[in-house]
Length: 452
Image (cartoon, rainbow, N blue to C red; front, side, top):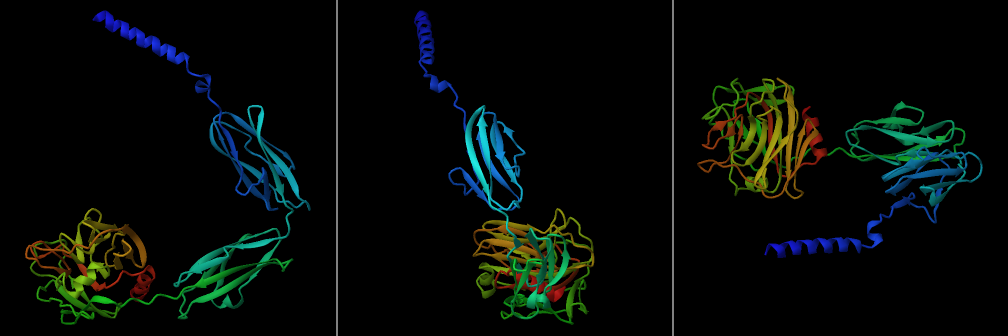
C-alpha cells in the first residue's frame, strides 16, 4: 500500500512539471500597458485651444517607464517630461498668444525609445477680451457680500451698477476682483440688478453679472402650542388649539418677571440645584394625547422653538428647559456629556441626537429651533438663526410615555417615567412654542430677527 501511495505522488509531480512545460509563451510574457488620454474635445489627435494662457492636461496610464517631449512654438512648455508606473497627469503650459497668428506645437509620448502617441496643439490668436464671473449671483434676503472676478487682457477695467447702485455698494477691490455688499432686503419684493463690466480703453468689451436678492421669509405662525406667561405666574396657550397649560405644579421656585428686552413676561426657575428628579412641583406642564389634533400634528412633522437663558455656565449635566422626552418624544436639552445645546427627536425606532457644539454661557439668551420633516426625512437644529446640526431620518415619530400612560410637555423640567418632573432647569424661559410644519432655514432666520 505504501508503494502505491509513493507511485501516485511521483506521477502527480511528473504531470505537474509536464503541464508547466506546455504553457504557451504568451501566457507568461507580460505585455506593457501604455495609454495617453488627451483633453476632452480633442479630435483626430488635434487639440484646439483659445488664445488665453492656460494648462492643457493629458492623462498617462502606464506599467513601464515613459517620457514626453514638446516641440514647435517656444510658447508651449512641458514641466513634467518623464514618468513611471501608474496614472500621471502631464500638463502642457501654453502662454497667451499675442503673436497675431495661430501657433502650433506637438506633444509626443514615448515608451522606451518608441513613439506611441503624438498630439498637435493648435492655439488661436488671442483677441481682446474681458470676462466677469460668476455671471449670476443670488443673494440671501438678509444680505451678504459677494465677489466678482474679472479676467481680461486689457490694462484697466471698470464697472457700472446702473439702477442697482441704490442697494449694491463696493466693499473691496484688487487688480482682478471686486467685492460688493448687499444689505437686508426690506422692500417687500425681490430685487434684481445688472452690473456692467467693461474695458476702459475698449468699452465695447463688455461682460454682465446679474444679481438677484430674495424677499425675507415671513415668520411662521402655524402654532400648535404658544405658551404665554402671565403676571400672576400662570401660563396659557395662545395657539388655535388652545392647549391646557397646567399651573398646579408651580411652587416657590417658579417666578415670572417682565422683560423689557423681549416685551413680555418670562418664566424664572430659581432653584440653583439643576437636574433634580422625582419632582412633584417646580414646573409647568401641557398634557396631550396621541389621538387629539395636537398629537396628530406632531406625528406628521413639526418645528420646536425655545428662547432661554441659563443662570449658570454650561456643565456636563443633562437639563431640559422645555421638552417631552420619556422613552420617546422630543425636546431640547443640555447634553449630559458636554452640556452643549442638543435637540432630541425619537424617530424610526431610535433617538436622533442633534448636537450643536454650542455651550451656553451664563445669563446669555439663545434662540433654538429644532425641526423634523417626516416627508423629506430630515431633522435640523438651528441656534441663533444658524444651522448647527442635521440628520437624515426614516420612520414614524414615537411619543413619550409614563407608567400611568400620561404624556405632557414640561417647561422647567422633563416628564419622568413615574409622571413626575426631572432634569430640572435653572434659568429663564422666554418663548416655548411648537409649530405644525417643519420650517425652512429662511423662516428660522425670520423668527430669530424677532428676538435677537
